Length: 419
Image (cartoon, rainbow, N blue to C red):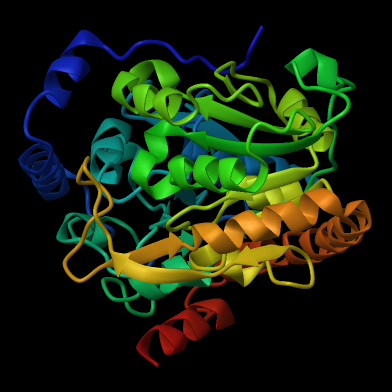
């Protein structure tokens, strides 16, 4: 049984989604931010035990971020406990948590006030409130500014996100990358046959969630680059691992139209437990991400940790850990950010358009050169092990327990954001 549910949205939520997107989001965020408890000063003294809230039971990027932090805390010896905090699946705070435990909420800014309202003022009293936020554009929309007064500080997984968030919370942003490597890898023993993959082909994986924006993840570019590089070659195979496909039928229609007639491309919609997801990545040869922007890039980072060759757009957060020494970056040009759903848009914001021709040539080179893939995979594993070990999480925990202690990551993010 899968540990995460991909259940249908509540009928009221479906009705809410039919309203005009931008007024709906702005109205809800403004009202809840006005009603929500505000962060009080002086900043409360923090106990050593961390309370980590998020979409613990849901297969989402935010949920995985919270689970990664909990696993890393256990591995690093940081006292921590988790609880469900989600607009979709409710808020279930622990009833017996230490009263001064700082609260780290893996809930992005527009939704955070609603979660605070559900937690209640009594639960929040005397707690340091921290938002773990990731934003995928260099400009933060007004919608995100409304919750700035509800948190004492913000943690974010990349310098790219930090630079944007610093514009609305100067001096209160701390870079804390996901501590993926703090916890040992435990992939299951599933082989290619379990995932319907051919044994005698170079397999390319594109893995993304439709809930994270079809336009931002840009799977059509990945399909185009693959088809340009390999055509109908049976010894080259593309797997599109798509989460939350059932909620976005129009996006799925676009995907199916893009792969029409291609016998060497398949869509996988099943939701796998973490150990099987790791096994899937281990079974492929190349992980491809021609994203337009990433606030971190969990799939490329996890693929590097598993020793895979990663081909990714050379912009935003993935460029902070993926370079030509440990992967295959794809050149790009910056264009105005345009998201039909209206989520990833802000005045003056840009994102990257990957060079399809260059991506096609890079894929061909990687597929034809097993020695290159082996070398890059080994180096990627080394880089990921060093970069995502969790030293920033340890430092952040240390700083939390010392009232008024400045933190070098917060200072550096602020300085670079204003440079």
